[in-house]
Amino acid sequence: ARRLSAPEEISRILAAESPHEVLGFGGAAAVSEEDAAQAWKRLVLLLHPDKLQRLGEGVREEGAEALHRVHTAKDELRKLSQEAGGDVPVEPVAAGPPRCLDSLQGRRKYEVS
Image (cartoon, rainbow, N blue to C red; front, side):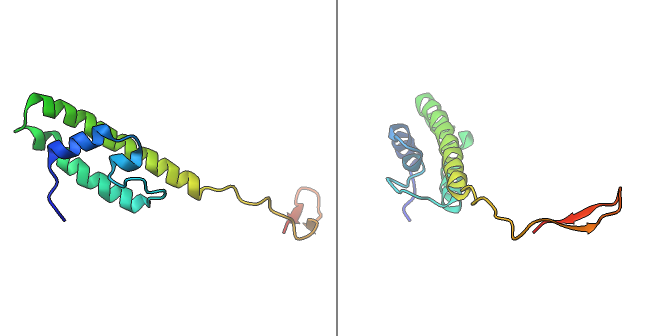
């Protein structure tokens, strides 16, 4: 894997139009949370303010904005992943009517299946 250049990545991130592009996935339709987390970690390490100290003030400011976009993109992809996996289940159907197991007053118990 080639070594990433902070100024190049900052420019790419600021030009990106979707969370997928920000994290470097291009037009990929579905990205796993694990892949998104790995891309996020790689970019956070590259764009950390301490790593940008040797660069000019303008690059540091753009780096801060790019880092913010990276965090936002990871959150958006996580939300999309959770929504895709959180389909509403089918309405449950009872196997039969409830049965009374104990009919004494104050101790009534029912079995529902």
